[in-house]
Image (cartoon, rainbow, N blue to C red; front, side):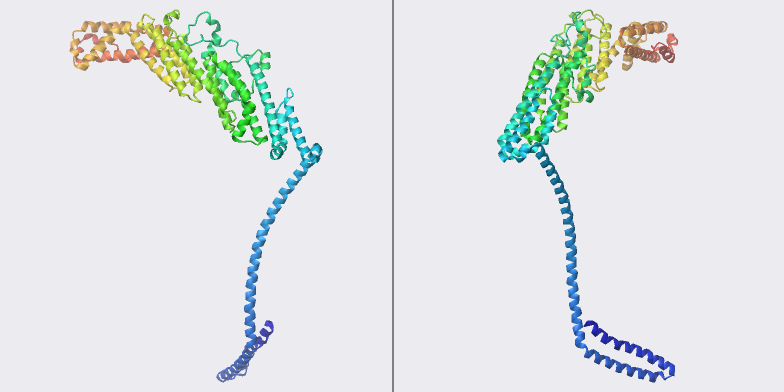
Length: 622
């Protein structure tokens, strides 16, 4: 109806427009007066307008109806637009839901296939369980799991294989735990009893076989640092050296050896190999660490336990074995005098404890602490015994006096450097304190031994040789700034300076005494008190000029014979020659004072630069 009314109105509009065009054309063509023609056109337009108004009035009802219809259409279109927007939102949501449903469908399909595969496997492998009534099925499951557990007991069985098999059927135990807790407890108890016996038997046998490849010669209560090194004891010198010397033993703490393959005793026996205790200890406890961690993870997985429940179950299985270990170690430790072996065992445990902590397996934490509580007191006791042995040493019972480094000093140096180097990774203040006490006793011992020499010169040679040897050994392993190194450096410097004065005194003592006396008087302004010492000064000047070369040569040879460390001897000679030049420079300075300028002998003084050049020629090449 709308289109019909629109077509009835449009002809009037078109007629008016066409009429205007035709009239204008006609007027122009005929040459009519435009004013007259304009009035005529205006009259015609008014007539047409009146006709159009009458047409519109006539169609007013239709126009109103058309307006209402248009308004209604707009409203309908607006509602349709809202509905379409809602449909679009719903379609987006539906699309997302469809995608989720597809994913769930795929997941359910996979689960269905897995269930069908398990069902097929159960039908094939366990038809009696699958098709039996409920009570009979429980019985079959119980029998199946128990048979798997009993298979652990077969000789030479690698129990990791049946453990892995059990893990595949964990859902059986889960089913029993949810429905038949009595049967589930029976299975768990049977597993605990079986594995407890297996581990105990394995580790007891392994430990006893390990002891057969230990060194036959071990330290005893007489193998202490301060004990006299008699001819009888020299037979065991090589073995005893391992008590105070780290040597290659420290390699046991390297990652490669610490977590390396465990020893196979029968293979070692065939090769006639022997090992120190710490090597056997490492092998035994690495086997424990490896098996303990694996067992704890199996228990947590198969029996579905965590926290204290998992620890209790683990201790039920490993408790007897761990008690055996502790008892065996207690027996060994009570009769052990090899402090380095004990200290290495302590640090093996400290590193193994760090490994289990890194793996977040707490199963062996209490055992590690128990072992350390056994080892630390014994190590401290052996260290205290060595301290007392040095404190109670009688120098007069240690044989012939010798200015070379003493064997007790060497023992201390090797031992101290060993303990310091091991202790760097896991520092222990109690160990530092005991080493400090040991150092004090060694210093006192060296002084007591030095006092046995009749001359101060020999005393100083003995002290310097021992301090130098101590430093050489300590600095190989300990840090340069360690307390031990710093203490002995100060002692060596002080005694070296004293020795230099001692060896300069015989050939140059007169000149040195004069210089010291004159410098003291110069500080007080009393140098004139030496004005009448011309004869003494003349003798000193001429005596030095004629004998210094021979004296320096003799002194150099004597020093090189006195010290075992050639480098140290060379350093002492250089220090002595430097000190000599400083004294002669002081001699020059005193004689250049106004008090002595009139002395004719001053012209006989050796030029200081010339002396320095000549002295360099006498320095030994090293």
